[in-house]
Image (cartoon, rainbow, N blue to C red; front, side, top):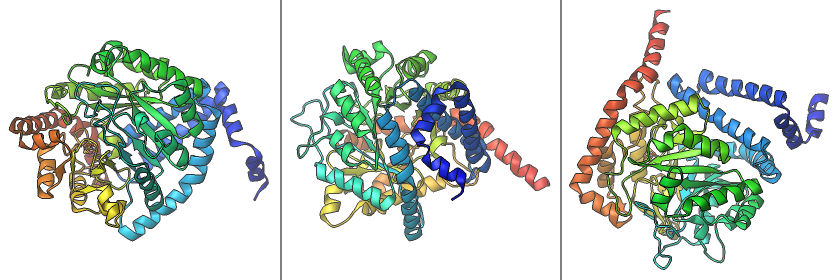
Length: 490
Ligand code: SF4
């Protein structure tokens, strides 16, 4: 080892980063250097040969997250323990062995494993928001056993090299099983990072402290807009409780974000400068996940769906907030370029699937149809790969490839409309029926026989495709076609 490496090894990495973050000039120069490297790798090297503009979308989102993280660090919103855990433990000790596991999975099966699993261990919730599928009465609420969730995590980490877990609900902080809860799960899986969707109302100072101690969990707290919209859908006083949760998390140095459901009624508010500035600057949230209302679950209605015109407008507004204002905002549908399209059914390179409180396994949180239940799979001696290789999931992945995943950059399908259930409803219905996937709840069953729902969804998809086609063709595909033409003339 040469002398410089020996010296570097003796410098505590966190101390060095602290110095970089706190000295303005050093911070700016380091950020510029890292961003240049990210740009080169993502946009110029472009290993997967995606349209250049898709790669730019990815570059902006990665760079914006980095900026959020540095800002939160500088403002003291990320505790030393969390920083150390993220950088030294998850960054340093976990990623290299994970790459080995991914490689050996690929050698054995011919493609990369999924990146994560989303689990909703508990259906109950202490709120009753309009249109949500969670159950507000805890007597009727259903729950997965702790040992099942624990096994899922151990298995995906070992077999897939997956160190990322998403927890959803119901309200995950209400889940109790075998004397343990979600924070015990995070504490005992230190080799995983948890993103937990929560309504935030139960994040007391004590809960925030436990999150800081676990150091591997980030809550994404649901809001519906500013005070008026949040209280209107979630209940009076909820907004104030959320602000208290933000305060508690800031005090303990737990990195957090927000999650928003965009409906026909709040689409403008949740993509406004005022909204982004309030949560992502003033309140210190690092990221914003935006979900357009999906008509599934209790009292579903396509009347709350944002209109095709609103969707187009949202695309434009989010592009501006991301590219010009440099916020980390990802819209699960309009930002399809970030993930190279649909990631459901355990797609290679970034994919996932979903397991709910009954153990039903679905391709995605928004596709409420299933052919397997994790409890039965385990009972019959199977594992997570049993589901991954199921014909139902394989058929969805086949569609993803046919639509554009890994296709040449001139042939990729419109990734502003990437979703086989929302934007191409007929596709998912066909796959569900062909594989006899069963509805996981009454609403999903009703949707299968509701003619107006079918027609409304198909019509919606066609209109959105029509409206966004020009952007996709001109901004994403035409430059690729031009490049091919130039190349052929050389
Ligand atoms: S099914 Fe739709 S919502 Fe689910 S991952 Fe695919 S594109 Fe996203």
